[in-house]
Amino acid sequence: MFEKLKGTWVLILVAAIFMLGACSNSNEEDANDGEHTEQTADTGHSHMEMSGTGEVPEGLEVEENPTYEVGSKVMIETDHMEGMKGAEATVSGAYHTTVYSISYTPTNGGEKVENHKWVIHEELMDPGEAPLAPGTEVKTDAAHMEGMEDAAVTIDTAEETTVYMVDFTTPDGEEVKYHKWVTEDELSPAE
Image 1 (spheres, rainbow, N blue to C red):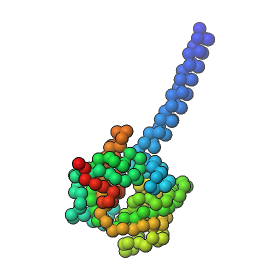
Image 2 (cartoon, rainbow, N blue to C red):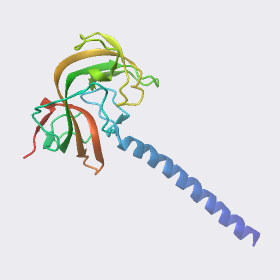
Image 3 (cartoon, rainbow, N blue to C red):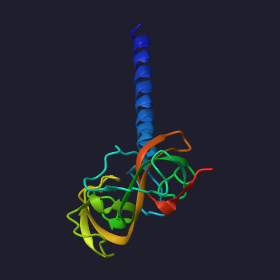
Image 4 (cartoon, rainbow, N blue to C red):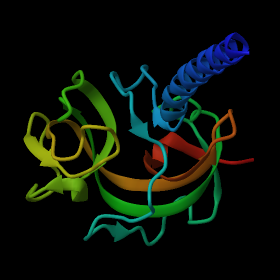
């Protein structure tokens, strides 16, 4: 009888270890599903938060006459992250600002990120007047990606334009809300 129970406990223990291993791998995959893993346009962009809160930085001006009004349907024409290009989206915000592509080393010790698109002027710490010139070094309080908040960044490009927050669904069915930011030339009207 004791041998039968011992065998049962061994099977239960093996099954539990197997399940924990499977859960561990699944959790790692799930964690990456909601994060930016694209490596084409913006190099080194793992761990990007696709969804946001909808809150915008203090001082950000609402665009009075945007090409794409809040609530309108658009097509995303950029590939900042996997599952984004070609997705139909709904505009959830339109703002007038200076938008920057930046390079920085994450504060959590990750690899240097080159040409991250986009951070807006209002997400920089004490930036002074817009636009900042390419090569300018400044800190950001944006948290679009793991290790970005409080990072020292270098401005790669600057452009005064309308930026949009968008809601969309990825090809694998994940709903993304308040994604920040896409520029006007990265959108087209939905047909």
